[in-house]
Image 1: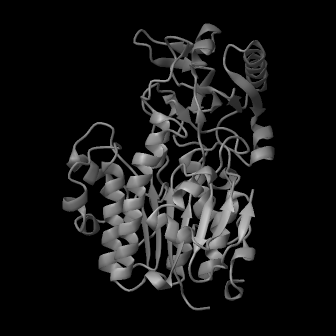
Image 2: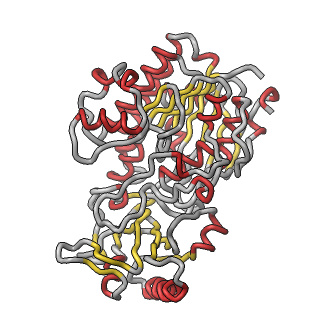
Image 3: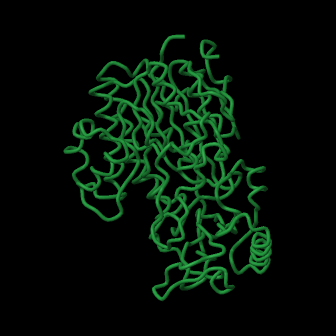
Length: 438
């Protein structure tokens, strides 16, 4: 099979309900015309950007790639470290971008989560600093794996205002990197992740007018410029375009800090400054759900005590808990595994806070994606769901799929490229691929 060109654009938090609007836009509409479309995709649990994008790139569930949350658990109440590196993957897990390079493709990955330590030709890892300046952001990208000579191709033009995760500067950096890669190097396989729709839904609401008037307008203009860059260098007509997403969002009316209950009930202690000094059990938020970590996860007596307490919190209604999963139950039902001992799913309007002191229940303040007026992290079968669009060489026209698992995305892309990613948990959607791909 001949080599193909592939451009994958993940618009974070794009949902099936958005497609009719996107069909009216010039750039998105050109891709959606006669496209193969998979609607209402069933994502993974928890529905968080980093675990899902890792599954989208590898075709395996979290019990094999081990990105169990956006963040890595520590007992600190402050900002937690985020997953960045592929080194947590099982040894038999391979990403599409890694397999493509090994098969002789030239590759780019732009702001795609958890791609540090993957061998990629032109790479802008998704990372940031919380409190820093423009140089601190440059240094953070280099530390995560970006090559200074690649950053220098677009930094002065697209990153002058970049000091952290704020929009539009963060998405502009990704867009500049994509344009530089296309115009200067023409990589054959490109993965790009844009966050502006997700950020706007968090701060304004799931279907707020700002999502369509502001965020999607920004994404439309960037997609248009990307397609024009491909046209200018003569590769557009031979490139398969894939537009995809990771999760939807649902509204938040209440924030709950269940660690406050653990403090009350003697399983978590804080010092005079309000920091965790010791704990037997501790919640870590995954927004609409939370994971519960034990100081001694092998202690059966402690596990039984905490399980009884979690069920009591659920039954009383005070903690906003709708369901309690043991580690074994959540692995069996959702292929989720990690160093936690329990997972709790929140009630429909509830998101969880990591706070250990202060009020048990309070209102959304948009200070974090978990504390916003809309968020995710919920069970994958609930709420608005993502969609995936395929257009161009190797793709059948006007194919419609519905309710397919997101774990199938990477095997489908691998089949399109004619490469192997080992033994993924998903399967290729051969029904939308032309025969020379199957």
